[in-house]
Length: 67
Image 1 (cartoon, helix red, strand yellow):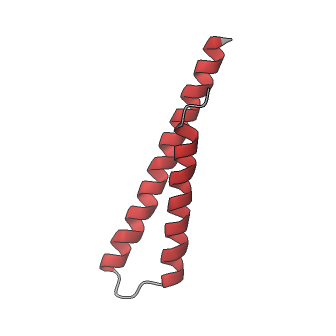
Image 2 (cartoon, helix red, strand yellow; image 1 turned 45 degrees about the vertical axis):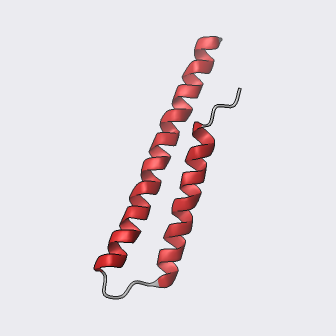
């Protein structure tokens, strides 16, 4: 039973790492596009930033150890 619990925690941490990576890629894409684009849409930048922050929060929630 402990082995199953450890596998569940390890799987959760792996999912959290993937979510963190997605958030980093999304926020990086927004930052780079705002530098190179002549005109960036404010609404799309706001939505992408909010989504990136929510993904970071979700990753933090998944990676935290709750016993």
